[in-house]
Length: 371
Image 1 (cartoon, rainbow, N blue to C red):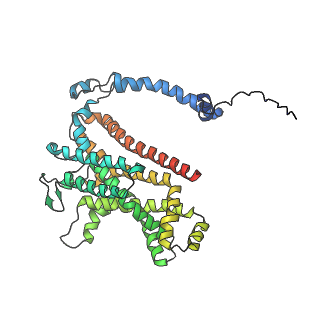
Image 2 (image 1 turned 180 degrees about the vertical axis):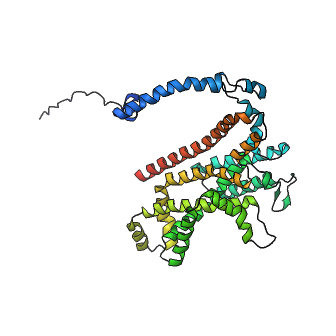
Image 3 (image 1 turned 90 degrees about the horizontal axis):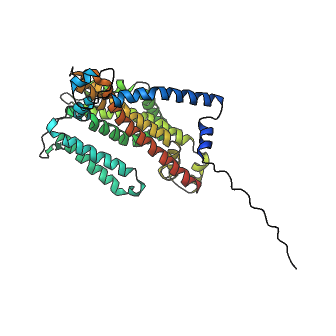
C-alpha cells in the first residue's frame, strides 16, 4: 500500500533575538520617555566630550613641571602632579628607600585575591597559601614578625599608608567579618533567648552609629578599657572596629537569605536525622548565601571604600595619602582634582572587578540551579 508524503514547504529562519537593533529598541528606545532621555544624554555627551578631551588630553601637561602646569591652569589638566607625587599617593609615609617592600606585599596580596576567585584553586591548600601571604605581608611591611627581626629595617604601623593599607584593611576585615556575620545571623534566628538578645543588641547598636564613631571609639576609648600601661596598636584597633561594623551589616544580609529558605528544607533535614550545625552547613547556608550574593558583594565594596575614613585616626590610606602629598606642597596643591581623579581610577578598578566577579558568581549559580 503506497503512502503519499506531503512535503512541508521550507520556512524562513526566525529573526535573531540578539541583533543590535533589538537591543537598542529594548534598552534605549522602549517608549517615549526612554527615547527622549537617550537623545538628551546623547546630545549632552556630544557637547561635553570634546571639552573633556581638550582639558584631559589635548591641552594637558603630562610632565612633572609645576611652572608649565601653572601656565595651563584652567585650560588643561596637570597630570604631572601624578608623575611627581605618585609614590607618596600609593605608599603614604612609608620610607622612600624601602617602598619596594609594600610594592611586593601588594603584589602578593592582589595575586592571591585573583587566584582565590578561580574555582579551580578552591582547595584546602588555598587556606595555607593565605596564611603564608599574610605572614609575608606583615613581615615585609613591618620588618618584624612576632617580635623577630627579618633582617629588614623596622617600620612602625603609623607609617604604613596608601594602597597597601587600603587593601590590607579591606581584605582582612572582610575575611574576619564574614564568619562572624554568619554566626550572628544564625544567632538572631536562634530559639535561645540569651543568644538571640546578644546578637540583636550587637547588630542594632552597631547599625545605629556611623563608622566614623566606631573608629573614634576604637582608637581613643578602647585603650581606656584596657589595663594600665597596655595600649594596643592603632592599626589593630581600627581593624577590629571596621570588622565589627561590617559584620553587623553583613549579618543582616545573611539573615535575609536565611529567611528566604522554605520551612520544608528544615523539615527534610530533620527527617534525615541531621543535627543543627550539619543542617546549616550542608543544606541551609549554601542556599541562603546563594540568594544574597549581590547584597554581600555590595557590602564588600562599601567596606573597601569606607577604609578612607581611617584618615581621622591618623592612618593615611589611599585618599589620606593624597592629602598628605599635596596639602604641604604649595606648588602642586592647586591640582588636587587631577590627584583625586587618579585615586578614583584606582578605586573604580577594584570596585568594578568585584562587581563583575559577583555577576560571574550569580551566573554560575543560576546555571547550577537550572541543571
